[in-house]
Image (cartoon, rainbow, N blue to C red):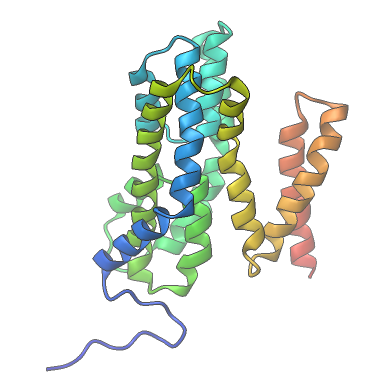
Length: 244
């Protein structure tokens, strides 16, 4: 009976798509789950503090799993903004996910995979899962990359739901400054994952340049500092990377 060909040297092989899925889930249940659940604990508390219901928190995680956009939605609602203004602000905040999808989907592509599976996977693209997949998937067998990514993302998505529910239930027992601090845990973890990927020198450079430029630009233009720092640092890192 013929045996399956061995994977090329240096390629990480889990032995199938299902083992790859569970490998991603196990990875997610470590530090990523702790950080994300803590962040969504803060989000759940924030939802309760502005007199929204728990189903608002859970529905936002279910349909628009992107913490910065969710925080913008809650804060603008609390400030009395119109639905149109909230929709535009959330759309602009979550626009960062588009280049993540564009860069990740070709990496997940494998022969014989139905197209709808990629559309489904795109719904669960978020910063933590994207960073981990971009770091790990290039060294995997192509057919196992998408299941690995889905294992990470579905696990973190479920943990986020539980964190939001727990945060809503515990609101009032956690000081406001602690709640805000918890919300910012996930961006900090994302920066550390990106900076720790020594194979992605341009990505590390973008993170460092953005961290340096952000506070300086805030002094000049608080309303546009984040956008200018992100676009400027990312573009400069790209150009410097091409030059090298």
